[in-house]
Amino acid sequence: MARLYLITDPLLDSKELLHLYDEAMLGGLGLFQLRVKGLDDSCFFKLAEEFSNRCSKAGVALIINDRPDIAMLVGAAGVHVGRCDLPVKTVRRLVGDDMLVGSSIHDPSQAVAAVRAGASYVAIGPCFATSVKPDQRPVGITVLRQTVSATDAPVCAIGGITPVNLGEVLDARPAYAAVITAVSRSDSPLRVKEFLLEEMKRDGGLTLQDI
Image (cartoon, rainbow, N blue to C red; front, side, top):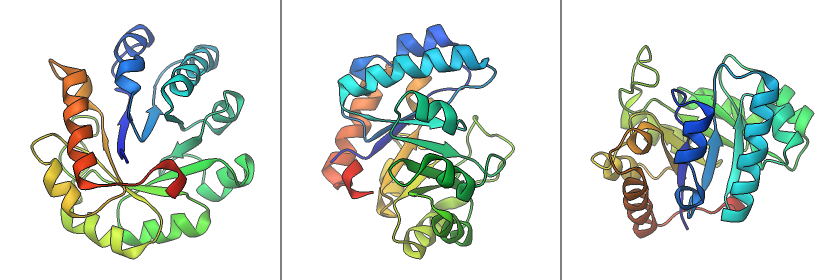
């Protein structure tokens, strides 16, 4: 019943990514997203292949950020696109009906539009201030709650989520809560991941089959 969505830290290089997100870190997750910036296509593909193997062994659904082509080539469960990436409708046409397509949105109306265009789930945020995207103003828990009410599709809360504010996020009843730096920049990444996972299990949640 885990609904923890772990996303790779964009500041880590390939070696650091492979070291941090090992099979123990992947264990028990709901979704895992490979999000990297600045890699050439060959390196990105090799990294995606490795994480496809790791996720398969750990029983976790792999989501590739931005790149539907690489997602299809490595047999990932899905692809996630932002507001400035390929349109959801185009991605859905490219990957077909069986692959998950996630879409980053910032308000309920965008969530509804994304689902109509073919998104399997939407990620609303940032819920709180975050160093990953310091230029973006937090949408807050009220907008998260409104988004959950606006669509029947799974909603993922993202942005600035930590062990301290997790309870507030879960009260809004999203299907997933995504974390990046709360794990990657912790002194004890695996311990933090396990804590978040246990809190979410107590709260209940969705599995991949519910999407």
